[in-house]
Length: 237
Image (cartoon, rainbow, N blue to C red):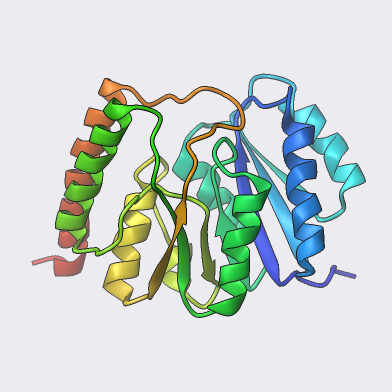
């Protein structure tokens, strides 16, 4: 007999976090247990090359709400989409495992319970240094102009939304631009978005891969995404 679907699914992509994966999962399951909302934690192993797979499978034996999805090809968007495909809950969440503390996660989910017909997303107010602040400002201004969105921190997670917002289950990006696509879809579909301020820049583990090259790629990618969405709406001529 198939297990009863949970009310909430949390998608958590991870890459090479074998050394602190147990602490990460146990911290999240602890706050989710106390939240009192039937849930599942969908752990997406994003092309891991370390021992994360073995650790994740052992954790899944101890934590029954934990499900494991293993991907061979990398990509933030690919991992998010894979997790959302596997998710069974009526309320869906995805978040960055390197930036999301258990307390931050439960704060967003508490808001989601109060506003079940809205998108809840993080708005990080603090960056590690002035270069990151400047780069983030440029990217967010670009996305606000391209996609006509009024909110900030396009890449901010957690992001929480109801399954009834079905257009968000049809995202197509496999890369970091999935969050810009997410914002564009929310604007096009008229989904209400509530931003929750996050006043920390602390990383839980791993190193950031953002650099000048990746930032320029994101700026160019946002323009390409805008053109692609315009072309899709206009259809064949």
